[in-house]
Length: 228
Image (cartoon, rainbow, N blue to C red):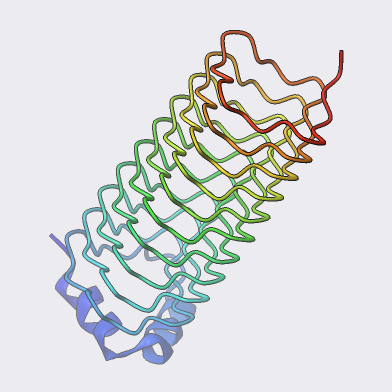
């Protein structure tokens, strides 16, 4: 259960909340299970806050700072996290269906088993993020930075990965069927056992990629760069 004092302060607004955080940097806010659906938390300082199982559906968290925050099992359906800083945040099993994450910083974040169906992650930073078994079906990752990310068994069915940077990513047994990977950088990625059936790989870079056991039926390889 959330600390009622912390919750009351946050509900006043981001300005008062940030001032309190500035004066009390040693306190790690406890907002577990908090009901904050629709709240306006634009630019809020939520560094290392405990937000596990909190309800942020349709909340405005754009430009908020959530570095190393605990958002496990949190409900962020339809929330606006545009350019939010979630570096090193814990989002495992969080519900991010339809969430706006354009330009968000999710570097080193834990998104294992998270639901990111139809989420907008274009231009997002997902470098070295844990996305094991995450559901990214129909998500928009246009020009996203996914270098070195862990996507083992992730579901990227019909995802938009056009011009995404995936070099060195771990995509073992991932589902990329009908995904748009045109002009994507897939150099040195591990795609062993991945399902790429019907994927668009036009102009993609695949030098050094591991493709053993991958399903490549119906893949569009036009202008794709593949090393011998």
